[in-house]
Image (cartoon, rainbow, N blue to C red):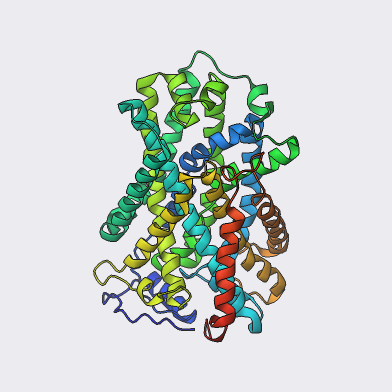
Length: 498
């Protein structure tokens, strides 16, 4: 398995750590092409930024308010965070053994039985691409929604589906330009983003805790159940409502995709995955408690003219001026998040194209000689995200469908290498970061959890089911799976990773 890229590598003498990283990459069959500039903190920062509790938690807060209410928002976050940590731990161990931007599909290829290895890698890669594009769509669409809410408050901007899509497209273009021309700026902003999120959560929660005269009771925050879905089964509503938390815990595979640009990748990559999950778990719990305790009027937040209940909660609890200022903090975090998502998405597209797996791979695997980044892949990531968001023009539940697609695509790709690693048993050659005797237990829990959520998030979320409320996640998954399957049978099985 060799890289088809033939761009010249940096002629400067590498450091000892860089040399070790490049040697390991060569052992895995690839030549160092991307610039290896990232520290362990920068690697962690990308995943932490993409998880972005100020993006995922708040853009899905409306969904949580309708699908379970406060009890689901609070306890769902705790439970889903724990399960996600098991998934991340299992992934991190494999990342340490195979630190390459190809990530999940390469892991699947190395861990599967030889006769079927290429097939496992092919479908893992396609699920990963689907999930990555959907995550980018979900993040930047959420940012567009919150930006629309701010413009409505500040300039009486009328929020319509068409205008939201225009804002969505503009944000994607901004992130495409930053990843094309501002490579060093992107790396710097990813580091800034960590502190923006940490300080942003602290300031917002502090303001919501001390400024309002009225707060909800603990029994409301930890025990109030709300069902505005139209379904009669409370259990069904709670299970479907877990999407709010699970969508937020996506994108941490970015640490794996950035390993070819990270020093001491075999250790920094896995640590980036795990740290991004547990730090986000804590920060998100604090943030959600802050917002839920500060709700002044539940129905008023749900019916907010801004279309974003968290924006209304800030306004009701803090007043117009402070509320709008903190809303800008949230929007800034969401823009950081989308920028990092485009970065990670483009690296996955680049790596998959490097092995010829996407149509027109010769285009998507090209690397800019000036910035040593995959510019064409950046714009494919942005364009794919825009396409996934367009159904919002005719489907009011399209955003939750996009988030479902992101979770399903990514988590299937996350868990396939773990399943194969379990089958491999003691013959798995561990990297310097591993789980020791806990590998099996952690892996089984991870695989079981992903099997459950894959089914859950394909189910309808609103009743009655109409064209306007239909969850099109299964359709998108089946279209991509069908395309990948037909291409595999017709051609790819004869040449992919052969």
